[in-house]
Image (tube, rainbow, N blue to C red):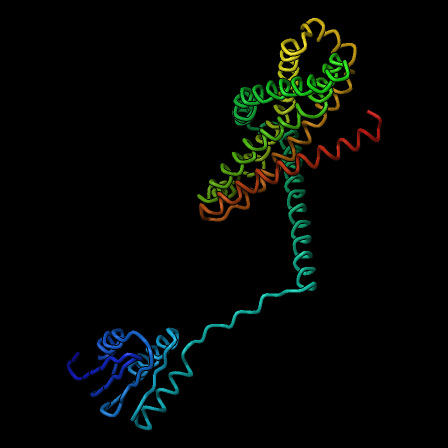
Length: 374
């Protein structure tokens, strides 16, 4: 290959090759030099610089970059017959080339495990503190709209009640109905062995009214609503609409958080009641089919053997579950950054966190009510 003032000759061999350069290696020749050196595929390469009349920093940089590329491929470059000035320039450029930082060795051993565990625990406490801070923001915003009713957005509340409650009725009803059917069928197959089929009514009533009705309803609402809250608020944050609200003097807590969480507080107990009714209906239907327990007998046994305290224990959990789901969804939405990947990650995190927190809260409620004897 030839350029206007520079000549490049190369000879390929099995283990590498030899390159002979002549003429000036200046900034004007760097492009042609890189093209010529790019044809070499590695191995042990000798570069003869005897015919080089002049070399500047750009030419030296091209030669050192070629040397590093060959070294990364497992070969080596040897410069021959270079003048003292060229050798000094090559050494200067080589020492000035940026070197990748050496990766820190991965920590291992008991100390590293304890350190990682401590960081996770501290991160967990920081996350819980963030959730409590958003709970405080909601309570402060709720107090503000109570004392300043004109700031309350009733239309937004109705819209969120429709989305959170009314549109969730079909899936909640179907879920509770099937749970009642499964409880009746499994209970019948077990209690029939002891001739205690009639107690399947107590099994269904206590399970649905006390635990499964509101718990599974909260899990479904967590999957639907926590993700919806995160996606809506996160999208607004990505488009800087929340910053625009603050610029206009609107409080995002009053506009976004209060209507959503308040809608959950109003609708989740109603959804829990719907789930209880549909669960009992499904259990009564399967008991009639599988055990021959008529609806009137089922109703009589239900009234005689089930205390109203089971209904109260179930429904009293609903506002707490609603607060958990709403706060988690709003908090996750406000953590979204400026990209779609962050939105998807926080949406998934909100669903998982809300469901996990609901189950933990339900377990704590069970222990609490057991200690009270309810």
